Length: 457
Image (tube, rainbow, N blue to C red):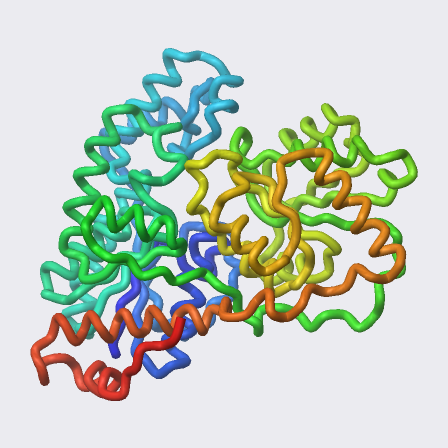
């Protein structure tokens, strides 16, 4: 099968959006498929491993250089309060209010809402569509796989698919208009525009894929099309071998690796729980964050008088983060404590399952992630400081007694990337059977489909 992946983020760019598509590319190449990738290389941190041949990756990007950028340059010179940063990226509503100047905040929001349709990566279209046309004329794929966000990538995949009559699959790593965070930054009029764009875009997609069963149902309701659920999963070979040396320290180490969204992902319940511990037990707890939002995290810790028990360090490369996870005592997972975040199932949870360390989830207690943790007896889901305090006491006692061991291996059953991507491979094969008349698809695709069977769930 000849597959073209369209994704703005791709390794070696060390951003979370690049991990899923990078691992998928590795899986497809290892399973004998021909592969090409249309992407960008604009991220300074290039530490994420590229696990396919470099010659399969085509990086195309030209930033906007026209009159629409004049006002953006003005904003960059005058970075006063706004819920949209000077480069067009988002900050939290709380941060935007803190920075002040409501008039300029409103102006920036309208301006970026106007020029960034469907998103702030829309200028990629001008460079990548011509590059994609040249690539397809030389090497016609059997199928196109577009992954988002940014949703510009789905528009690119759809345009190329229609022009060359190639079926394409839309991969929603996050939802678009139904995203739980949608509307906090976008001006109100954008919802109608984006909803229309999403309908037009998805109308021609041969299949929809997403990472959560609740999100799959939301896509079905909005577009009248079934959506296959393909979890992010974990890749066993990415993790280091666990150390055979037992940790003799009495300190309970709780770790979080990833972004903090002030106003949405809030560790306050954990900090309050630590504050409720007695002096002797409190000294045995250390919370380590590896990521951004240093000031916000430390300020929250100070409010609960546990600043000395919290450390915030810079983000680390992907495999270093995996090593930190597997060596932690407890793994912290932060989500938004709102029903709108019910379907959010982050890739981090599957890494945590592989690490087999107890998980503490602070967020919406009836979410897909929460149910998965409970079903697999993998930790505690709670926003209540008193309940978290009691669990911390139990974990501290278990560590002191040498009972804080790895979770049962069954917690990660069926969640590897290979097991999940087998389902996606079947989606591709099914799309090809429906799209191409018998004998018209490429020899590679026909050979691949001849012995295809649907994988088990």
